[in-house]
Length: 99
Length: 489
Image (cartoon, rainbow over all chains, first blue to last red; front, side, top):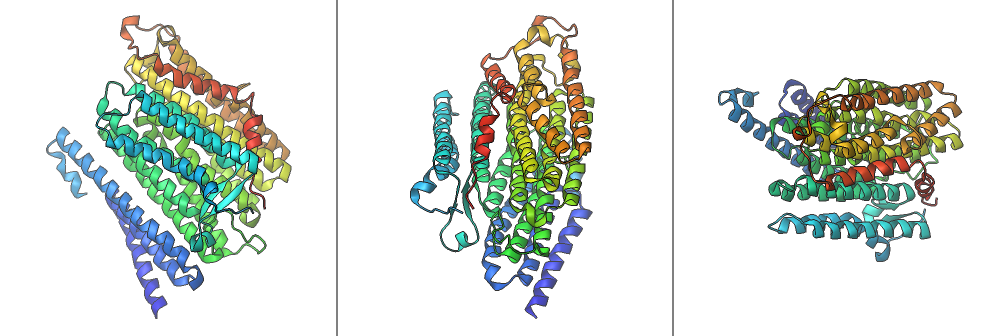
């Protein structure tokens, strides 16, 4: 039952990540998509991992998830800076931020 | 395998990794940007640590230092061997020259000169961590530290085009390291290790290793910008400041190849096949030809140099089809050729970018057709560009020549003559884009008053690196001897 739940959650996260990546051209949202893909991949790995190898995965996830999150935040920051620049050049060009 | 965990064994490599970070904290704590003496002390200390590692390695041989407890059981720790030491030395050489160049390049821009050290110095730490890591966890950490710094360096001037390039780079980083991380996860699940060398090589390779290898190879080829996954590289390297592009092009792209080469060379018997090697070889050949062609077509000088990186990265990856199909002797020749190519390209490309930056500064334009008359008024920068170009083209006695010659020998040794054809054609393409720049510089152009002359100190680093790239062909025995220092089984 637990395995089924993990498989579902991991699969949903992966699908959400793939959908977000393919449907949006916004870089910051794509960064979020990568984060979802990372999460989904690890949840699926957790289902199939033998217990003696669990610690290695926890180490990887403990490092990988925050780092991916931080990269996503960095991407968001860059995106906002780009919007600011486009607003400075053309004050009416703010529509791009709703992409 | 020699495994030690004493404090004295850890001290030198740990200091080598941490020292640039401490240096960055010091830079951060100062109100003024780091000056010449502060930079000289930092470079000197790092040089002494680098020399210490190399001498220690030659005296005591290679070894693995594992962390205590559970992390050590998973293979997490540092690995001191010849190839790692060679890249640490290469990093010191290039980063020191970049530090000098950055110092003089931004001398009239104190704000940039202050900010740049917060990015360059942690990047140096991250690179050293990658060269010395024994496992994918530390490699991942090093690669992400490097990625953060690179994004900052590309976007440093805050203009729209570099910001877009930084975003594209970030996207490549996220996708590449996601694949690497998942590959490492599969490796833990299947083999209970995070080490680059899968310890238990007695068993038949299973699906776990195949999946892990596919993910790791895909992620790292993306981050190394191998064709057709190269599209992020030219804008990223072409739009940042020239001394920073030198650092990115000379060192950062090498990290992905280095990890992949270590993984393949250590576990080749478990998963590498002629088919897999052939697939990488086709991508490498396409990179050589496409990169060369695109470099020849560029109208901006820095973009030409950036596309030249796409072209030269292809040569590194020709190692994989050659080692997959060869006897141990020929495989060693292929490895030596690829490593020489990495070193000579790193030196030559850093020199090319720095010289190109000086030329762009001199003519106040990025366009190649603006270079007319440069041969008369900016001869030193042009000489550095030309000497580095000799290595890029693969003319004797340069390191580039020896590397390509060794790869040619390996490809003929395996009977795979078609790679030799690609190597020779790539050399002609490189000559075409280098001579295209040279041809323009000898045309009649504007008078002396139209050129902007920077400090003579800006000529020192590119000239030094260009001479090293050319001279490498004469002293190639030294790096190759260091390459042979391995961890005893």
